[in-house]
Length: 436
Image (cartoon, helix red, strand yellow):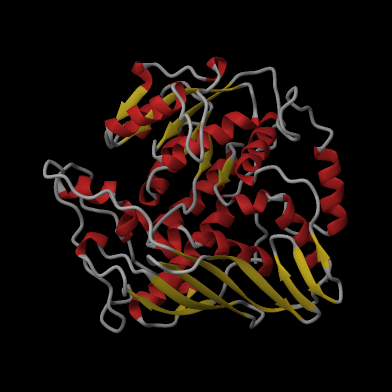
């Protein structure tokens, strides 16, 4: 199995502590939180995808380095760009999560650099930026990544990076292109940048729980938002504004959301599984407004060592909340978020920066050091692992990872990107839905 391009894979505990100590010597910004970087050169960024996560990613990136400056915004919808402009210039006062306006020296967006429509991503990329944040619905990620790397830009791309095997294969090629061009490719799998996860994984690699024999991972929560339908919207606009519920746009929630936990399993086991057997369905999402998305999945992933991981995810109103991972070894168990039980019992007690800030800190430091991080291969593999679970559940078949990567013809790209018709809604039925 090829090694992944990440500074964290393969760290022993000693190497982790040494790297952490070195990182603490890097320059900080005045009285800002420890670890926030600075630099003499202005780093100009643009945002593609002005929803809540896109707005949050900008704030994470600007918090990571005071010399970062936002200069361009793009989204398919004008009202989303306007909402982002208001968030950045007026802020969000009061409430549970107030946000101040962006500092004047970090905000340089003009109306001429606000773009809308299906080609907004290309206009942002061409707006004179150094780093682009790609935070649209996941279906568009491969297309946007291709344009960004071909233009010579560094990239922060939210997870997942595709919704089908065709998209994953392209992203893997683009990860290689980014490496050849010495461009950064950092994904939104922020647990890989969290101090508690890093320290726990380092101890596991040192043998703290022995040989890994299995594990479990979970993302179970209540239902999420739905934006309704307006009579003036075309079917394409309706689906894009409610993208969570359409597999061609989101990958379904096992891919769009549960990838966080699945990625941790791949990290622990050194790569993706060899096969998966899954099931699931729709029990609360029976209304047609929920497109073709399911509301629960249960998947067993088997890794090369023979170890098996049980993956559970659910989005349903009135249900309990459980998000996390558990690893089982011959000498104990571990919660990768900072706890080991067994012979070498331990609990993380160190300081930790918000990992959603930390991933941008690490990204910008790597760019300034001339050694840009490239997480493209690992996030592509974790994306395909989540797709593997979805495909197995949708079809009712055991599916091999290598077949899905190399032979599957599944491609969810619509015939055209236009404000009219959208892909038809066909709810998957195990035993009926074909394996392609």
